[in-house]
Image 1: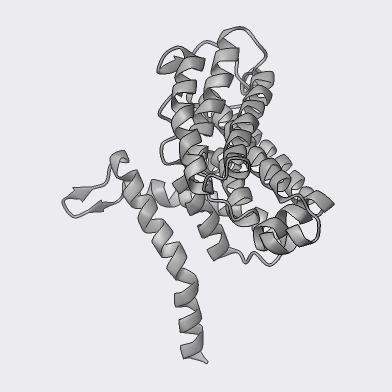
Image 2 (image 1 turned 90 degrees about the horizontal axis):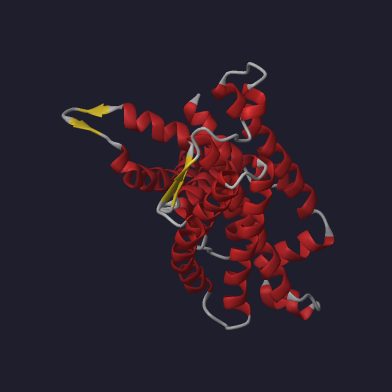
Length: 291
């Protein structure tokens, strides 16, 4: 249940990574800073007495701004997209510390987005899964609709063939700006929900975000084909849950005298990504041998 809960809330982050990585072909490292930014903004507003749902919206807006900075560094200052994301991520570490005023903010005793459901007698874990599932479905529906609009089609075309789209008169800088900003808004929203779920916001909680998002996207593509927008979006959510379940299982397994610990999370993630990347080729070879 815990793995499914984490898979759902981090699927919002994975959808943000999917938006830049697959739709825009823009490797955005700044998400490692956007997730704790969303957590910091949400936690700060809650401790100041603001509405918990309003804090999630404010976190998404802050993430949109962070993504906009990355896009401007790339499009206006002509900094390589990968380097632009790294620069934003580095800068966000200091900004997150400024926002929180301390390395972490505890939320114990404050109302969160789960409080209304828990006050109705719903168990905390069921309330979390239900709320995360609602947010995830809403974002998935929005993305499927958005990718079929004129702007969404232009954004996807920008990731497929930048020069061709420019020749058609599309302002690719605007497409990159909007896509990267929207991606980081989803990531920051995920950070806000994660902070309220865990009961604290921490400046270091974004480490490995982009790797986990990449793993979710790749695992989803290995399980479900991305032949349609709907399958691609749903595949990211499925991949996020499979990834979290795989991590939970790996941490519970003992390999002889070796017992994996949370400190091995990055190693587990790397192994899962390698398996997911090689799985389609192995499956194709096996299919050829059978025929």
